[in-house]
Amino acid sequence: MRFLSLAPLATALLVVAVTAWWTSGLSERELAALEDAHEVEFLPGDLVFQDLACGERCDLIRDVTGSPYSHVGFVDVDADGERVVWEALSNVEKVPLATFVRRGAFAIYRPSAALASRHADIRDAIAAMRGRPYDADYQWDEGAIYCSELIAKGIRDALGEDLFVPHTVELGGHANRVHALTQGRLTERTRLVSPADLARSDHYTRVVDLL
Image (cartoon, rainbow, N blue to C red; front, top):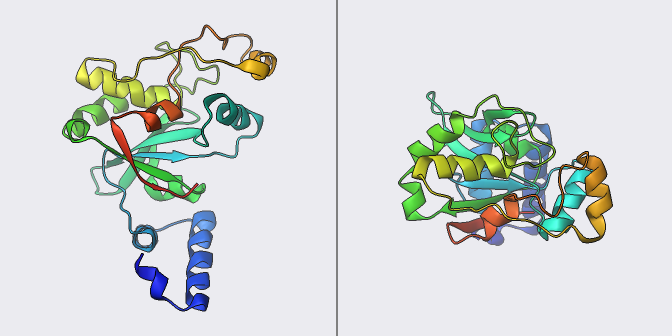
């Protein structure tokens, strides 16, 4: 990386500055500097993954899926040219990319050429779900919706086919706790698509992982 030639003190100061941006808020200029520091760029259509600090629920997501990714969003550019992320968090909404990144470290995954060519269609399909409440029970239905479900269904609705097929998961020793957290709705018969499923697919390639 280009910053390897900096003096150790300057490198340390850069790391401190980048960390401060994540915790205190990012302007677009600062976000661009962050991209430059890591020699990456957020592009429309990218998926951006995070490990949210949501306590036991995120701990269980990590343990059950075998992945540090507990949240995912879809990068876009709005009509004003601001980069945003579509996500299902408290509900389906778009937030400034700077706001998303401020929550903590991230990983960027880039779509295949075939998916990138359908960016506008996928974005429109995701935007059509705007306002739906977050699904804390992880059900594959059309009411409430969770983060990776939003992405998988947006792609499905845009392409007319399921690139990400919902599947059951093994809960193992976590079954009783998951049952309690989801009022018995999430079981080993529940079909879902996790953030890890999106990251492990052949349709996206990792660009950078800072988690």
